[in-house]
Image (cartoon, rainbow, N blue to C red; front, top):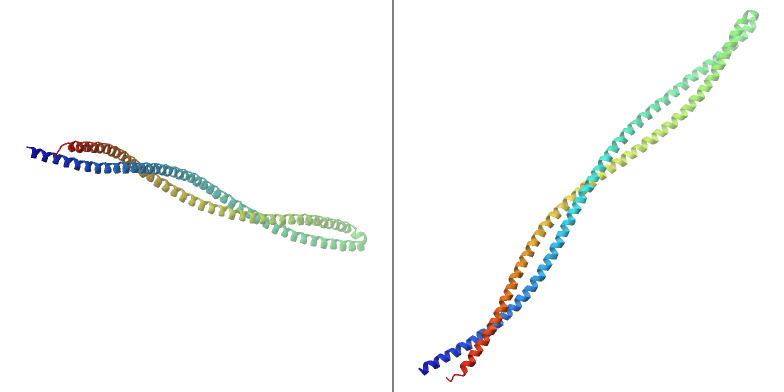
Length: 287
């Protein structure tokens, strides 16, 4: 009986010793687990904060890209309106150029007609001079004829006067025609200058229209690119929010694991104390 009791005490003492070592190991492991969980929790907090900041930044980029896309759309509409206005301006300038060219042609025709009038006046003046000479000769012959040619002399004087007035009128008309011809030449030069300026304005307007077409195409490409960027950023923001949510869940699990590790550490420390007390109690028995 006594030998059996001794064997039992030895077994209890050995178990208490093993329990002490095991509880020491568990205490160390639980302490390491608690420290690791705490460090992991801090790292998860930092990661969650970084992801939150990244999500905010991505959402801001998405908003800015969307605003840029909207602004680009407005600019594209404005450039299209400007292009339409340029097209209308080109049409108006072309019409004006055609009218100027028609007017220039009519003025040129008028200049040719004024030259024809000058030629006719030359003929009239030549005829008037010849008539004056003929009338002078007739007056001389009438004077030689004496009384018989007196009536003819009167007619000859009237003819000479008419020829003289015709010459004077011809000179006045020639002066007028010369003035008109000068005005016509000035008008032709002015019309040519207007035509040249209209052609230059037409070229400038066409170049502006082409530039606006290129601007419109570039703005539409930019707008489309901004829309794509905005869509990608929104998707990235959604993914980032999901990652943030997962990190928060992992952080909660880590906090729970840390609590468990702290409780385990406390329990193993108590168990270690109990095992130590048991060993001390076993030492009081004499084996």
